[in-house]
Length: 135
Image (tube, rainbow, N blue to C red; front, side, top):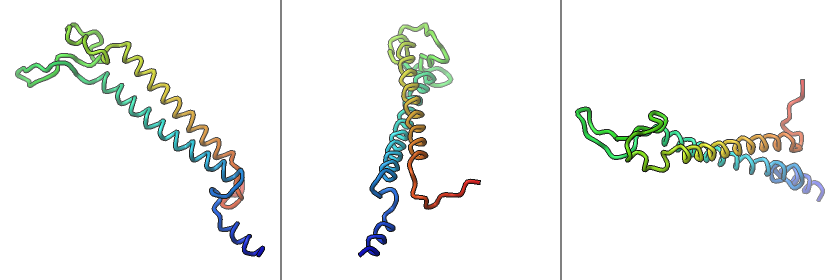
């Protein structure tokens, strides 16, 4: 009976083993998954911000060079002179600064959760299998 129990304990992987080592490993992987989600959200918000800053918008006009939008991006032309360009609220500086702040918060959350996941995985007690000796 004792041989069967030791064989069962030896075949159980460390991440599913009961106790603090298994729980800490699961917590580290869960936090790492959240850090990936935060990172993807931050990248999406940064992409949206860059798109709003650089892309042309507004009604299109035809010329001998082809059709192009009347209004240039806020980074290219910070204060448009046309009244039609001032109608898009997302292209105005207060909204753009709000999106920038949101991107910054998501980036900080992604970095913090990634660091926390790495610290958790380092602090998790391991069973000694697969560890290299310190030189």
